[in-house]
Amino acid sequence: MSQFMDVHHGMKDITADQLMQAHQADLAIEKEEGVHFKKAWADPESGTVYCLSEAPSADAVQRIHERAGHKADEVHPVPLTV
Image (tube, rainbow, N blue to C red; front, side, top):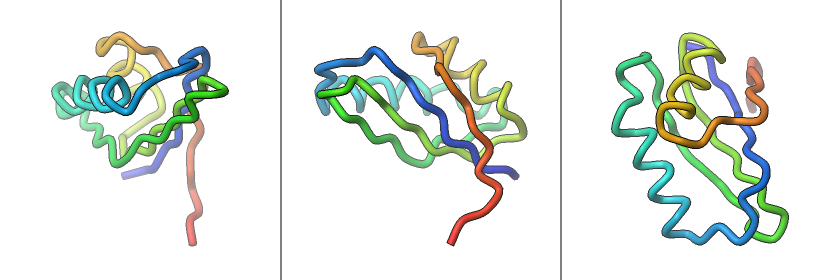
């Protein structure tokens, strides 16, 4: 399975609780697309949120985010890690 990093903009002042709620919304339905969201990070000052996932495709990642109510602005493949 491939890894993806997606980016959400415009989430200025997001709290830890709001980030957890958004992540839980993804986790609740991720299996329907064969996706697994591994971790999420946020910078409340800039409003940027990052999510790392394993998925069959970038489209599958985006579909889960859309259904959970927070479409990603960018979805990038991560073919190499160290």
